[in-house]
Amino acid sequence: MYVQHWKIIALLSLWALLTALTFWWYQFRQIQPFAQTNAFFAAADLPAPPEFSGLPGLKLVHFWREGCLCNPANLEHLRELLSEYRTSDLHLFVVASGKLPSHWLNTSYTTLDKNTNAGLVSAIPSAPGLAIWDTNNRLAYFGPYSVGPTCSARNSVIGLVLDSLLAGQNTELTTMAGNGCFCDWNTKQG
Image (cartoon, rainbow, N blue to C red; front, side):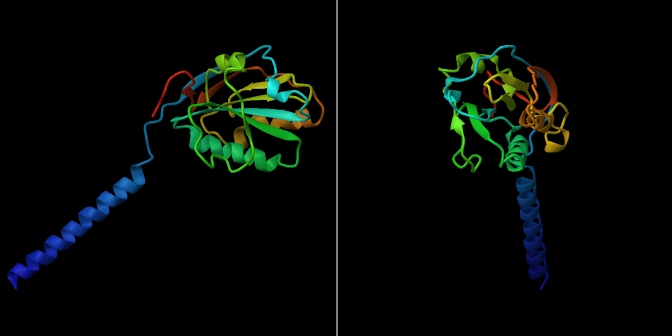
C-alpha cells in the first residue's frame, strides 16, 4: 500500500511537470524580446514603379521582410486597411526581402521586381513600411504604418492619407519617423 501511494504521487508529479512544460512551450514559443526602435523614412522623388503604368487608382506598396518579428501585428493592420478600403480603387503591391509565405494575405497583390525598382528598394530603411502613389503616380506617402509603439488602424496616419487622396486632395508625406517595432531592411533576422 505504501509503494502504491508513492507511485500515485510520482505519476501526479510527472503529470503536473508535463502540463507546466507544455503550457510554458505553448505560451512562450512566439514571444521574443522586443525593443522599440526608431525608423526614419525619407524619399523625395521616387519614381513610380513601371508596373503602375496605365493602372488607375491608388497604389499601395507594402515593404515586407522575412523573419521580422513585427510582421504579425503589421499584417493585422494591413488587413484592417484593405477591409476598410476594399471598395476603393486601391491596388496592393509588395516589395519583399526574402520569401513571402504561401497564403500570406489571402488577397490579391502584385510583387514588385526588386531589380526593376532598385531606387525604391534602396530607399527602404526598415520594414514593415509603406509607400502610396496617387492616381497620377505621384508619391504621396513613404513611411511607417503608424508612428507610435503599437501598430493598428487606431493610431495610423495611413487612413488619413487614403481618405485625403480619395477626396482628390494632394498629399505629400514623404519624410516620416516612427517609433515602434521595425526591422532593418538590409539585415536578416530570425
